Image (cartoon, rainbow, N blue to C red; front, side):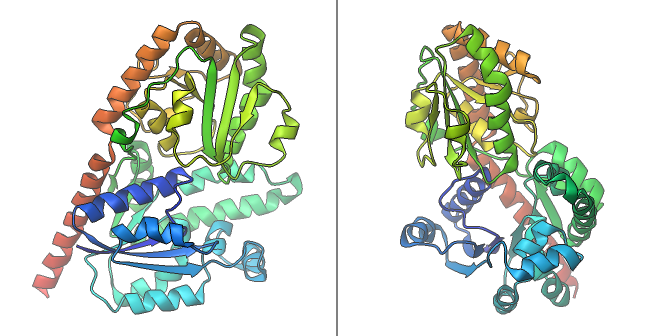
Length: 405
């Protein structure tokens, strides 16, 4: 099929769960023979390495710059436009609209748009053309917004309430126009179906299981690992909660335990705020396997977010035992005590960590059970087949309408 795939960011480098999902699905579908044109709005120019990483899987790559976050257009739209803040940041882009208008003159079997917050530049043109499209939501964005709004100062609470109201309205508006809505978990599918008033299909998050098959964690190392993209507020909250509330309790019982924190866009002030030699600070790590081999537990104290967490799936694929919250395993069919260990408050999380640190053989058993689950249910090949089925249904409906006409 000819697919026009639209993203508000470049999927390479794979520095976040969303980017990893995009890259792996594009690669899998291209390997299956589909011809993909990728339209990207990027806040930074794409270099030669990024283009080289993407070009083998694409028929065409179209990249347009996104205006700066603090541009006058965005600031004025945040106050006066009917759109929520995230939509204003990613929308109101005349050049992008013009390029999309030209692309609509071509024949596409599928147009796929990622995230409701990126939809504004395409709405009018899609309506005028009558072109059906797929919308993929990685989270229920109107619920996820709380993770960002919590960091606004108290004097801006009026704006927070306004923006939450605007996003709920926007979400319903966009979902109602999509021919098909795709979610990443069954729980999100139910919410999105209620908002759109038609069924939402699930395309699971996945892992390149073969990539992590060679990893053998060091269950005796007494080192914990967390990885995240810190442009995403739930990951910031997880690290800060862990260091303020959980690690002090753990260090009372296991003072020699080290905590490895890695990921993209790490706040520069963190090493100064938590100046402890037992904390190891890393930036973005393109290949996680060496880190995974050197640690004994993946610790993900996530309190906010949505969808399913690629960081958790990747840890399980590497046979790392995961200690996390219910939020950390949202969307996964896993059992506490079998595939992972759960805690919802600092004391229970600390106790779960202590238990596995004192029993390396038990940690290994939990890690192997998690790996078995991910291999069976979350390899990217399965996700790609689910998305192909959505495409087939869309094309059959489209061909049926054309035949009637």
